[in-house]
Amino acid sequence: MISLRAGSPRRWPAIAGAVVALAAVILGWYAVQTVRADCLVAFSAITDGKGNTLPDANGRVWSDKELAERAYQQAVDSGRCDPPSARWKQWLD
Image (cartoon, rainbow, N blue to C red; front, side):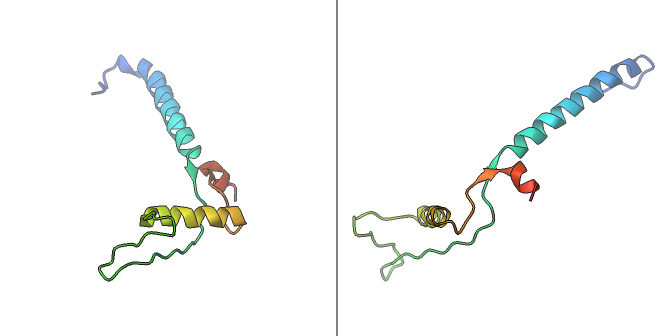
C-alpha cells in the first residue's frame, strides 16, 4: 500500500517513471503480436449420417480447426487474403 505521508512526495517521480515504463513495455508487447487481417474463408467437410467427418483420399480426418487453417493458408497463398502481420502495422492502415 502506498503511504501519503509528508516524506513520500520524493518517491512520486520514481513511481510515475516505473508506471510509464511498465505501460510502454506492455504496449510494445501488444503491438508486436502477430495478428491476421480480416479475411473471410469458407470450408466444408463430408460427414457420415452421425455427423462424423469422413477421411480424405489419403485416409486423414481433418478437424474443423485444421480445415479452417488450411482454407486460410490457401487464401493467403492465392493472394485473396493478407498474410499475418504485426498488430502495429494494422494501426497504420
